[in-house]
Image (cartoon, rainbow, N blue to C red; front, side):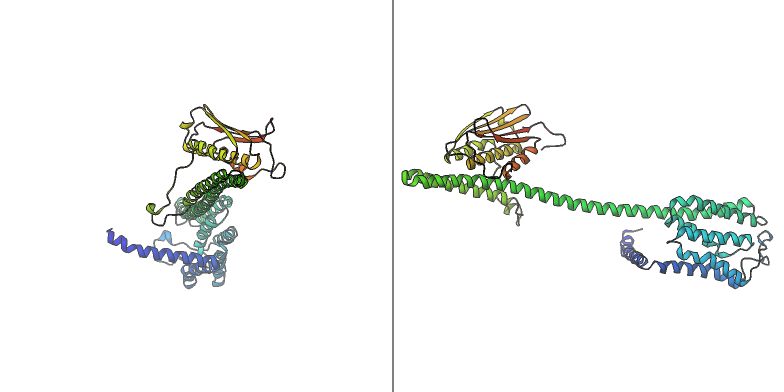
Length: 429
């Protein structure tokens, strides 16, 4: 078949597919229409010829002698009654397949017990097919046993013309074909239904992953915004209070405080633009995207401490171990935890507070210690944690770590975070 012929068949296949889909939708809406059509078709093809010609070959035909079988001649009323018993149960072949098969089998056995042969016997094979397709599978063994018994009865009745084994082979082969066809279509429909369910589940899972990713990104951005805005606003407020106090006593100190407020505000604005810039989709491609600055790391903690010192706190900062070898993600986590801890000290401690900050790296363990000399002045209800401590714990949890915070023995406040630096299997953090 050429490519042009294949291309020409495309629209035909599409039309047939749409037509089949419309027929299935119509069948689901009015299932009795198809069942009635099947009964009408069986009647026209198999019942009407018997009514017109008086039944199957009565022995007067011109065929070979061994095929001229003398069957019982039934009156029209009796023939019509048996045909109705064979065909009408097909109306329930999909809704009540077991009951329809049982009724047809009973009429079939009665008919052959009387020695009559009808073309409408084909209804028994249709009923077996429908039971295999629509019925309960546990009823199939009983149906097959009944079918085998009925076929044996027919083979015995026609044994005068056809050997029993030949008749059984033909009849049981036909029954097996009907059974296999029903099971094959049933399995195919189950496979298609499974594929549809799997596609629906995958679509739901995709939507759930998308919503989860959105929620995670919102949480990350909210945490970044809290760290940036909270820290810089705390520094600005402290500098503004100090500058207002120093204006009358030492004007130069007041000017210095205003300069530091401006620098801190500009830095906060730059960090906010960076965080918000990554959320904005570039309209003109990479060239039109936001200009991103590097994420802060341990090397920036010195400048962070300088800002806190300018706000009035005394900060003693030391490190131990190879902190420069840490990856960017760990360094950002350390920076944000230190930033939040210093911000809390700036909010709650007195201006002459001394803060000891230590970052210690030992093998696969990183410890952050922030301790101040107090005094502590809680701003919330007892036992209530603010967003800052929750954010620190969330960041530490990304590296299998933990954060503890509470009063120290000297009357101040301490924060200790421990991160696990052990490489995880399955890729980078």
